Amino acid sequence: MAALAEVKNKQEFEDFVKSDRIVAVHFGASWADSCASVDEILAEYCKELKDSFSAARIDAEGVPEVSLAHKIAAAPTIVFFKSGSEVGRVNGFNPAELREVITKQTFASGTAQATKSTTKENLNERLKRLINKSRMTLFMKGNPQQPRCGFSRQTVELLKSVNADYWTFDILSDEEVRQGLKVYSDWPTYPQLYLDGELVGGLDVIREELSDPDFVARMPKLV
Image 1 (cartoon, rainbow, N blue to C red):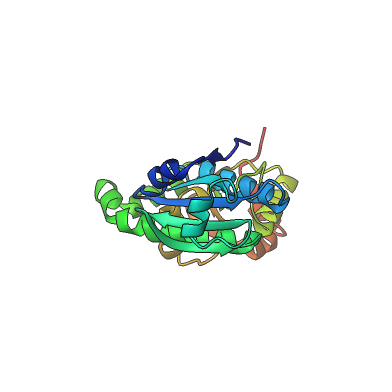
Image 2: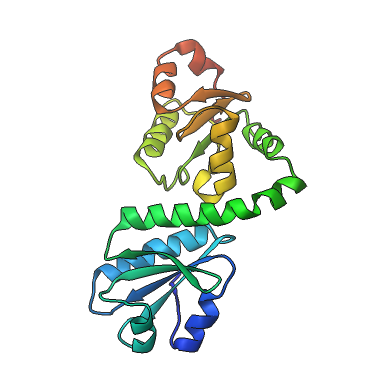
């Protein structure tokens, strides 16, 4: 995994946080073991949300003027900025809260640009194309090699058990698709499986359908 970018002084910090997209600054310390885990989580999201999110680390003790200005009391502390202004923070090592804030902030930022992107391409048409990219398409968190939630992992295992051939889309990589598909298919959760352009459902429905030999026979199979 790529290392998290590092800002080393006040000027680099100010240049980094003035971005018009959401950025996170991890105020860390070499002596705090949990800071390495925070770096990994942030680096992962930088990779997945590269068009809407960036993150960097700063030594909380090494650049004290920045830490004092932003009232940093402990490491790790992760502060979120947009256009130079603080828009959120996570105090301490709390992966669940960190992921929640990243998702919330990047989605809020993305909705401001949604009209711009959907004027170029109608969102429903895009969703329809994604659904029909393969005979069977799975919208999931992560990918079959690295599922990002238990429901997605179980779905992958179920499909593997019947040697299914399918294409996947990581909904964590595109918030517009993630939110739009819930409305498009009137199905509020993920994963979502589609066969021949039609919604099958989520994990429970998939598990139930796989008990039907006729349904399994319809599924495309790996050669």
